[in-house]
Length: 406
Image (cartoon, one colour):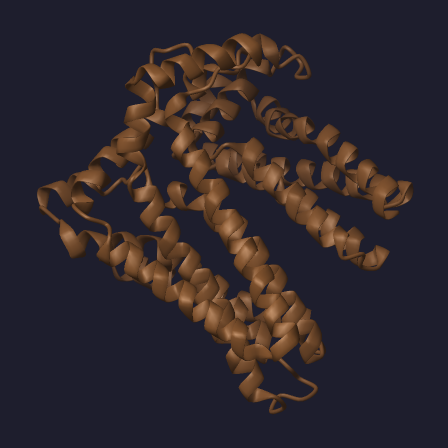
């Protein structure tokens, strides 16, 4: 137990120092005006991120049985859900503080303005977080209605008929929440920015406090009978991301034969991993959100080198999906050794990432014709880095698997 605590403390310390190092190296010489602009971009990104990630942080909850045995309800349950998700944001919160105060050229200049904007950003992020908690906690009853009602069944039939794509009507409330929360954050940001440019930082500061206060009141005062909503919503997400018998379920959408771009030798392996990752975190929506964020950056027309860096970081971040499949909860090492060779798993992990090459190329090319960046050479560089890093990450997983054999 002592060893586990020591390891956990060491890991926390390393992440703490890494956050400070990354944030400090990024903004150490930025003037205050550029820090404020960067902070506004962070709020924009946070609005979309919180709208999307909140249900995956909450549900399915592995502690649901313990909560049921302990009969945790009411305000205690709300505090538990708040803590469960809030701890995920401790490093982003730290990064925000570093963003405003890591000023090596003039560390004691404009301290009040730095404090105002720090509180503003933290309040905006926390306010959106509590609003998302309130919205997603009541998804269960809404999803049950859409799944079981005639209206939901009719919608399923029409989409399957006209769009030729199956949909689970129970996912509609989550989709609506994602859009509403993201739009709310972006609209408030635009309003606060306009007021801030006209009247100074005080209107932005007040906007953040109002959003945080509203989020706290919504979640802690208006989440009536939270235990009922919690169990219903947890059951919905457990079913949504688990195995079901219906052909329209989220896990039945992709068939092995649809992976035409994968060599037949490893097609089944790739299919297994894609099924597992989509059950936990729909990759398409995550990548689409990343493309939107990159386009928002491009809309500001930064220099070509900065844009190249953004595309490179975004491309490499795709490989988080490979790392996800390397977790023992997804793919126990004994099972991988039993099912295939080291070589087959290397190519399985690598080939998983081939699917994102076309979206990357199309998005970069479209951006080139609209904004003039990234150029053809920059695009080739990004794609080469993408493939090289995919090979490195896949090789890392193969080495780890090899060590587990000894």
